[in-house]
Length: 545
Ligand code: GLN
Image (cartoon, rainbow, N blue to C red; front, side, top):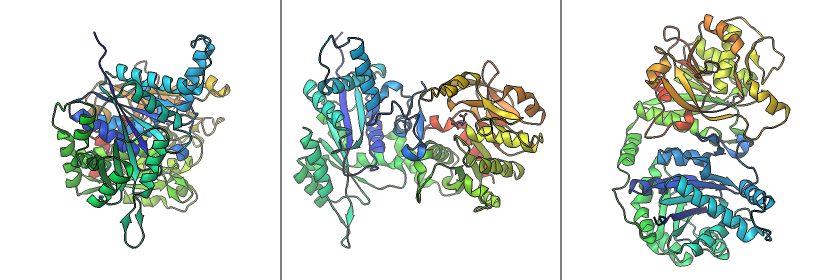
């Protein structure tokens, strides 16, 4: 059988970073999927790190974890949320990982004694990986986001890849530039010059964009479209307006208002097989329809870099709260609470009363830990719905041991290695990794099952006996202390099939309206069209406050 022809779309950013390439990529992928094509999305990150796992969230934003355990860029989370599909490690690569493959192959005589130069061998490896991604995902269209901005040194080899693929498969490769139009001066004029320069940068790499998505604070007018079309040598209908929006979920609808899928399908010689965005438009209507607020506080430490707030560090948590709020017909109102502020007294713990529910998300290390423990205690004692994710679960267990069991020095050994009551302890298989400084991709990562205890809040939410959740941790509830914790009233409502690892803890409804923690990261699999049952249950409890 002849191999089916795969179409390749590349998305590259111009002018500056943070213009929303990831959401643009996700949106195009979703739109083409909704028109009946099999689509998959790939992210290329132009850095040396083999994955995102060793990076600090304040540097890089959230580390997203795939079902197969790949630690990757948060954009992968956007692709999964928009496509409503699990992606695999074939869909993510970094400069470092591409070079490593080429070098390993060279060491194995895989190039048969040839001189292995950067061009063409690095782009060839990238092309090979994109072909594998197409095959593994059974995709007709592979849409690839190239990290960084056109004109910088780091992503040049990936632009070279686009050029080589265009030569290899003429008519099957499309380049989309996501650019930005700044507002200038008192006339409030949207300026197109930076976009023209971005196109020049692509031109000097031997490329010409087929479509330009023009990001701006306001919708761009006909005049601006004409100007971009003229100076950047694209047709006016291929200049797509992407103004700022309240919810990122509106973006696919906006791009379709400018008929982006018609344009893409035509250029790739594909035919639409179905009507676009039917379910998605209903979601957007729902988002616009909700008005009654539910106010959720997220207590963390990864959002301050200088005076900036970096919501990116918890992006999946934020999105999961939104999905669950919409499912409960509520308007999500999310606020940041710094755990450290509860430690140094700059914020009073009573402030938590202002919230309908509190989330303590994942984290590492000792900074801000006592603040999080104080938050768990206050929520437990004052019956404020509490949802702990990974570290947020572990620290709620520490709090329970200290205040209910009376083990004043109870702690996680991540913070206090010598405590007499290590209620959270390093998993045996992780000890070796730590002593050998073997940090990269060695946590307990990706999908693991949990069995759900009947009659619990978790069981009521999941409505399933066994569930699969994604993980990223090295510590666990210490098996030696499980019995004491249970005797003191803590319920372990989700456990690993071998009953060793405590996956979910909760307090019974007779004691607290919603006090739950999960060792896993349910936020990673919440989707706008498939809100996560535990988040839905949490927001439901919060909505009753
Ligand atoms: N630091 C904790 C652990 O390694 C929690 C990790 C997390 O919250 N992702 O187990």
